[in-house]
Length: 89
Image 1 (cartoon, rainbow, N blue to C red):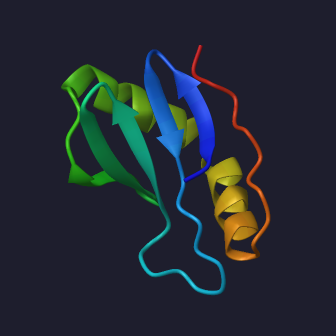
Image 2 (image 1 turned 45 degrees about the vertical axis):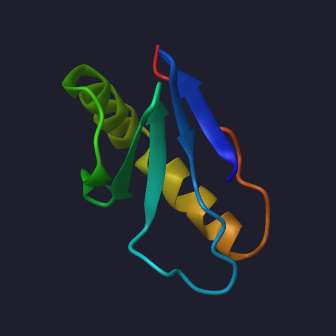
Image 3 (image 1 turned 30 degrees about the vertical axis):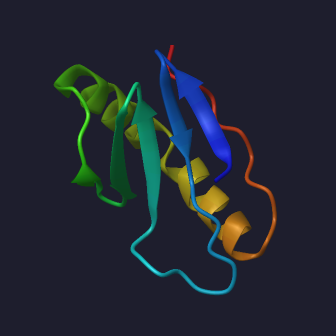
């Protein structure tokens, strides 16, 4: 699963879905031993768990980068590599 961004010990990845999506557009956030899945529109946690602070950081980052997340999802569907997305600073 390609890495899109990394900030505050949180790693953001998106699954490859060549051809057709098997779920709503989403990405995965990893923090220590925890994993959560977030939809991209609207930005919300749809599975898994993160500590509250990290969940808020991921949601803020995703809100700022919705267009890039959408573009990376389209790249992956086409079998192309996603572009890195700026970390939260």
